Length: 373
Image (tube, rainbow, N blue to C red; front, side, top):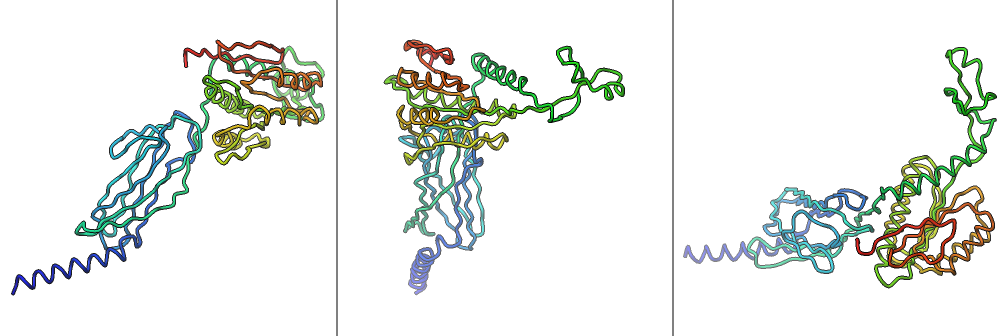
């Protein structure tokens, strides 16, 4: 008799817990997978954070969270993971009622882009491991991986050349009606700038500082088409890194920077034109713009940008054109702008085996050795 009662109780408990789990397994169960940072630079480290909050009394003895991220992420811990077209992860947990679990997965972001968390599914079992429950989760978190910043002698030489021209142009256009302050006299200063009253107080020659009637502005024009069959992706990425590095340096010198390109996002929508700005926050906006580039509208889309400049361009701006593509159809358009007096420089990344067949005075050639990449 006792055996029968025990069996009956066991059957009742089994059926009761099965119904309970069927109804309540995901009730007040909070799951979130997010990136620790909203953006990082390529080559930097970050983390994925898994947060499980079981805000009810019912425990979950077996809980699996499956998700996928880009395979360019290099995770420190490869357990419970497989890499095919993406990095797939299947993490197992056992969580009691009223318990919260947080797990961090450290990784290195090796590639520029905008990365999402996809394929998020949740599976759990009842107390006796006889039934499996499943649920698909929405996850809108994303990570911007910004382009690498270039810091080489070639880059420094180019940047100093452009900055020298800008400073020279500023010096020619000083505005005597815009007073900025007082500084020590320099032998290169004109005697008319000496502030005699301030000099008498300080016991040495002091001169007035003035603002400028022209404030420098930089406009970056980025062509992402290479028209190459071999490793064109490398030159495209280099062009993006150059754009980011140039923008960063000019903004550090408080010079306004804007950007236009023939880039397309993941939905094949044109990224178009990004307005100018001078703040450090604007650098984040520029890098997000560059991180979002997935495709390009080929050289035709870039020539459309140049045609618009032929019709109208900002004479107060200095243009920096970055284009691995340097064939005659594009150069003839740029020759027109040069003849019109447009202030611009062109950076041409190219492979040493390819060479640059046609040179222009406005071109700065950036050689890449193919056998070293």
